[in-house]
Structure formats: C-alpha cells, structure tokens
Image (cartoon, rainbow, N blue to C red; front, side):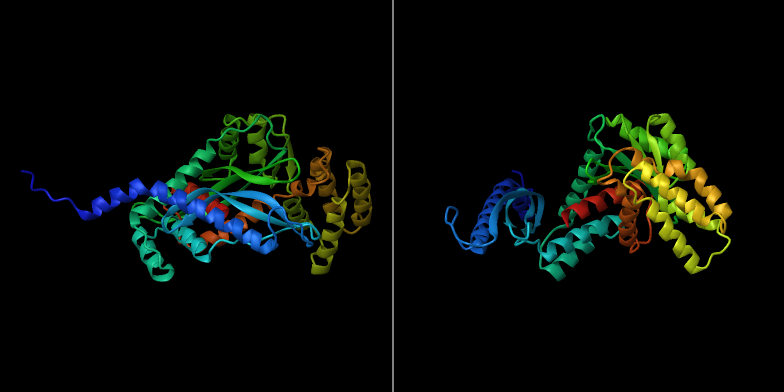
Length: 381
C-alpha cells in the first residue's frame, strides 16, 4: 500500500491549470460584452437608431495583452467611439492604474534585481492581488521570450525608408572578481514612409566602434533588411565605416544637432546672444522645401557670417553638402524626422530616466534583456 501523501496545493494547482484557459476565455467574452454595453450607453442609442449628436461607432481595436489577477488575456476586442465634429477618437475605456503599476513592478524585479517574492508582497499589500512568485517568474520569462522572438522577425527587402542609429552608455555593477565598468548599448530605429517609426534591434558592446555597428547592421541584414536608403547618425566615423561594409549604397545623414554643436566650438565670440543668433540662422536653412532652396539660404548664411566667423563658415561649407542628404531623398512631408537623431535621443531620454532608478546592470546580456522588457512595458502602458 502506498502511504505517500498528496499535497492539496498540488491538486489545486493542477485543477487551476485545467480550468485556466476556460476561465480566461469566459472573462474575455464578458469584458467585451460589458465594453459594448458601455459604448451604447455613451452613444445613447441602439445600433440602428438615429439620434442627433457628434458621436459615432468607430469599429474595434485589438488589445494584445490585458493583465488580470487570474492571468493574461490576449486578443481583447474593444469598441471605439469617434467624434465626427472634432475628428478624433473619444476615449471611454482606460486601463486600471493597478495594472500599470504591477507591470512596472514586474519589470523592476528583473531590471533592478528585486526578488519575485518582494513583488508578490507588494502586490498583495498595495493592490490586493494574490499572485505567486512562480507566476511572476513566468510572466517575466514569457515577456523576455516574446521580445527575443520579435528580434528574430524578418523584414521585407526595403521595409523602411531610413534607419536612425545611436548609442547610450550603461553602467555594469562591480562584482568580487571584476571592477565596475561602462558599456555601449547601440539601438537601430526604423522610419517608415510617412514618418512612423519603431525600434528594430539593439546590440551591446564595450565601445561605440565600427565592429559594434557592423554587428548591428549585420543582424538587420540577416533578418531581411537588405536595402537601407538612408542612415541617420551622430556623424561618428564608426557608423560610416560599418555602413560601407553592410549597406554600401546607403546615404549617410549626419545629425544636424551634433553638427551644430561642433560648429559652435569654432566660434570666436561665444556669448549667449551670439550663439542664439547662430542657431536661429542655422536651423532656418533646413526649413527649406528642396535642395535648391536650401543652397540659396546656405549662401545667404555664409555671406552673413563670413566676416565675423571665418572658421565657422569654412567648416560649414565643408560639411553642408552632406547635411542636406535628407532633402535629396524627396520625402519632404516628414523629412524633418531625418534631420537629427532625435528619434533615438527621445527614446534614450525616457530609457535613461527609467533605468536611473536602478544601480546598474549585472552583465551585457542583462542590459540587452532589460531593453527588451522596457520596450514591452512601453507597449503595455
């Protein structure tokens, strides 16, 4: 006779795993039904009734993930309302604040080295949610796996009109056998026709050098992005050297903001007012609608500053032709996004603000994973 006892918690866990799919599907259907009822209440009329007012039904949107105390619901179909007079969507559904805070804590548990048990205690104390450390671990691991799958997705031969690349310097923690050190996290952002953009891939490296950028470009090429018409970078030679190997036909647009900073170094008079005038005249050139107009305005700029700042004018003349590469591509309606690396800079600014709460990364692999989970958290919130 077998006298081994079976733990009740094990039986409860088995029962929950068997019922989990059915329960989450039922919750999804109930939430969709309640959302439709809320839309009808806001509109104040049935589906085929006519009633004056600016609000109209506007189809549905698909929410990828909804975090609940019972698990993650995927593929939630939520109704939308549009104001035809204001020509905008009317938001009548919003995520619960506790959901966003819990998602942030899950990311913090990985990025900051916080234990899953602390996350469980925090959720129970502040949100009244009963979750397990194993569940938290599964959510974080599933998020990491999802981002890794995304990094393996293939692109079409020319999926993006431009690629913006830049780097952020990160700090690695000190360990008993290693001193603290810094590293570079290189990020490529793709710009689609029309100006929409998204993060394509990233690469960790010890230095912001040619080998690191070549590895990043090679990953994009192997994923199917065989043609890149324009690469926007901060002007460092490492990007140019790497692009000549992987994307030899791509044109390189230097970041105008970085170039202006370099031009200001050659000023003889560096007062605040003098630099303000320079910036005003400089950016005025790049508001041109085409190359010919930019060249005329650049000639006016040279005549205006030649007498007082000859060194600045010489450096400007040498780099001007490369600085208007974004105008040569014929994408004027949204080419303002390609004048600088501000796409990457804005992304890095938010990333630095988020990571500033943590003491640093454990390893380069940890920084790669942290960036992936950060992107996932930005999608969920």
